[in-house]
Length: 101
Length: 153
Ligand SMILES: Nc1ncnc2c1ncn2[C@@H]1O[C@H](COP(=O)(O)OP(=O)(O)OP(=O)(O)O)[C@@H](O)[C@H]1O
Ligand SMILES: [Mg+2]
Image 1 (tube, rainbow over the protein chains, first blue to last red):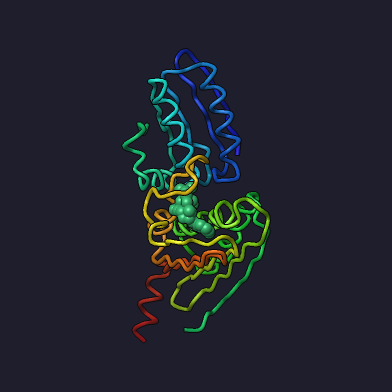
Image 2: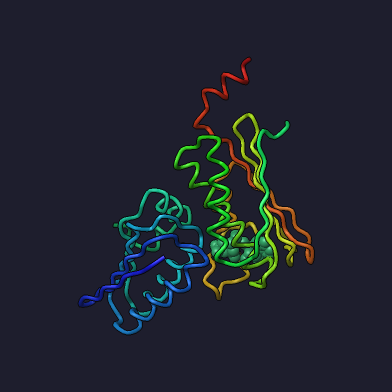
């Protein structure tokens, strides 16, 4: 699992790729939070286009980032969700917390 | 009913093995010619159960996780995922959506809910201090026509 981060104006974009599980979630979380804490963006965009697998560890990751952004008065946008990942996100009710693009 | 194909796995409770475990079960399941969606459902459910053994059962200490999988001739797969860890005192409560004993690790408490929504049956047997066995069952419907045909004859 890898993450590529782009910071532009008030937006942090995190492009995730590979398998998002308990094993990989911690490293990804640290990288995203480092950028968010540094640049205090208005929105955090998580891009799942290249994510090939996700379980509830990914739900935890999104919920945690949602809380972090909420504390700073910003929002989380989930982008390019492959169908199986959208299925797990919806099951968790994340479509009510974050915006889907 | 007698299983038409069986397999067993035993591996260290290292988080790096979560990917190995779900991929191995998926490869075994391929004998049933599942759809991509069915394969992903099983992989995700197995990943939930195995992660629970590692995170909760053994609390990240290294021990053994055991998996057995049986395929039955009516296109059913039954997977048992077992640890000899701390066990669950109140299984009913543990299976409630959003219940977690590890919120500080950003666990959502949705592992069992995910398993239940992706599989046909989820059974949990647990004894505090002795360990936990999760049994996952799913009918693979991609060969549904064969199945209807067989059950008629
Ligand atoms: N193998 C196990 N051994 C001991 N306790 C377990 C085991 N599996 C589950 N539990 C208990 O059941 C609770 C709920 O499990 P569930 O998988 O639904 O959520 P979680 O693991 O806490 O969070 P998530 O799976 O969303 O990351 C756990 O928090 C834990 O207390
Ligand atoms: Mg879990």
